[in-house]
Image 1 (cartoon, rainbow, N blue to C red):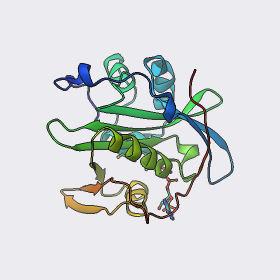
Image 2: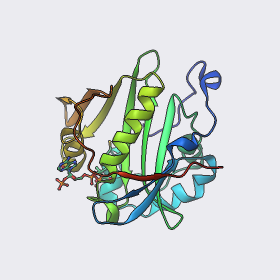
Image 3: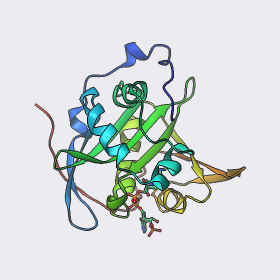
Image 4: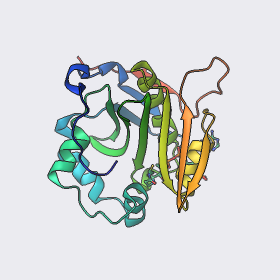
Length: 204
Ligand SMILES: CC(C)(COP(=O)(O)OP(=O)(O)OC[C@H]1O[C@@H](n2cnc3c(N)ncnc32)[C@H](O)[C@@H]1OP(=O)(O)O)[C@@H](O)C(=O)NCCC(=O)NCCS
């Protein structure tokens, strides 16, 4: 979702306080410890810097068009979530954002649209796969049972993340875009995650 939209009906009532329970430290595939936490409105300047540091290719894959800078209403939309219908998790290293994953509930359904962006030099460390797992658990807890995503057909990395995930993904092509969809209910026989959470660091 690239543009600000009106809040969903009843969103204010469903809004939740900051879910510190979702904070955790994780060791990436290359052995770096990163911190994962829900986004807050204070992240707007960090998110702007993160976006400005992305390659044109990464921006294009995320937004399907060039998008040099995030405008103030977009920063507001992306950072001000209700932690129920809309959740974003950020990955931090030394106080700077290196990745963001988010879901947005699709009105009047039990589905949510999911999207990711990882800073170029942090790609292929298992971060998107980790965020997908964490977002799915959080979303399921909030009554969402299915994730959907629209991915440009040339975006091999994103498609690989979905197809290699623990979820049973169904994909269909629609004029250059692959729409993937999968149930997110936890399973008892699911494979081990690629990255393990080292420790929870709930905020005080
Ligand atoms: C797409 C994107 C989010 C992937 O992020 P990432 O953190 O690099 O992804 P991961 O490291 O979790 O996974 C990438 C690789 O691990 C592989 N992988 C993931 N899970 C795996 C598993 N269980 N077993 C083996 N390989 C696995 C993927 O196939 C992929 O491998 P490859 O690149 O060698 O083919 C990132 O490239 C990006 O930000 N791109 C620009 C923005 C974008 O495209 N967003 C998508 C919009 S929906």
